[in-house]
Amino acid sequence: MRYRLAKIIESFQSYPGIYTSPLIPARFERVVRQLAAVSPWVDKILVYQYQGMMNKPGSAAFCGSPESTKLYTAYVNWLGTQEQGNRRS
Image (cartoon, rainbow, N blue to C red; front, side, top):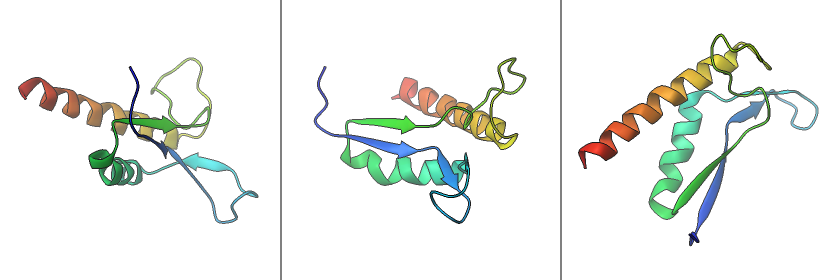
């Protein structure tokens, strides 16, 4: 299947000092704002992340900051609400 238009959004942010500071998981509100801004205009959305930006709580292969579990959990909860809404349509 070919998509007419796709958009990549970012699941990370940096401390002040781009290119000289570490990347950290984005607040989920930022991710949702990106999703809402592009959804009406694209056929496919891809989420770009570096390793360690999203971690399942309790994962044996944890990598990244503790904040990464908050982003993962918020995303999974949001995704569940989206899937439920699609089933009702």
